[in-house]
Every structure is written in C-alpha cells, then in structure tokens.
Length: 84
Image (spheres, rainbow, N blue to C red):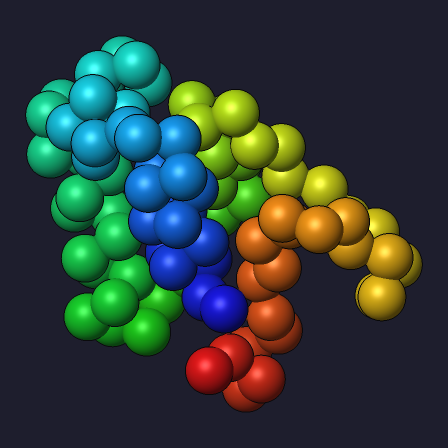
C-alpha cells in the first residue's frame, strides 16, 4: 500500500479524524488532509518524519524490519512500482 493509504488506515483503526490528528500535531485543521490529497494527486510521497508523526498520533510506529517478519496488524508500505 502507499504511505498515504497506510496513514488513512491507521487513522481509521484509531478512530481518529484527519482534523483531530492535525490538531494533535500542532498544525492547522486541514494539514493531514492536504498532505494526503497532495500525495494522491501528484503520485508523490510523504517523508518518513512526517509519516512517523502522523502514524504516532494513531498509536503506530514507523519501523524497518526484514521482509516477511511483519507482525499481524502491520500496515506495510510497498516500494514504488509495487503498490496496488
């Protein structure tokens, strides 16, 4: 999955709105929505530090681990070109 889709899923799993997550990050109400929409529209990416902050609000951590060792419930961000 793409980074923005993983963030959306984490928000959903945590019962967190994009506006609420933006506030918890100390940003404007539309911050998360704008970044996710921009990534969708441009095919761009979200930086690791930004993704980690957004995921952290949802109770997730951004981690690198050997392929195939992801625990159940992990949101896996695929490399470009392999994203569905």
